[in-house]
Image (tube, rainbow, N blue to C red; front, side, top):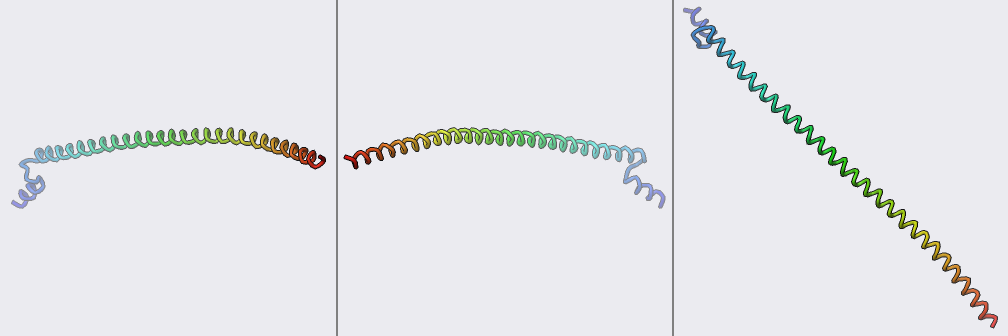
Length: 113
């Protein structure tokens, strides 16, 4: 009787060892399928994360490149305007000197007369 109880305890309530093994095998198969499915989902999410990261990096790179090109255009325009202002400054300085010379001549002519 003790051996019978021990065997029935070992078989977890099943009538035979083969039935017990089939049930255990089915449970192991279900667990394997479940873990395989979970791993597949994780791989899919990992790929999606990598693709999103790549797209985000590309978008940041494009954004940075756009800002860089815009800054370069602004610097080019500033340099052009600065050059134009330098030319205008030189022209204005010449004009002031010319007017100064003319005023000086007029003043001298007035003082002589």
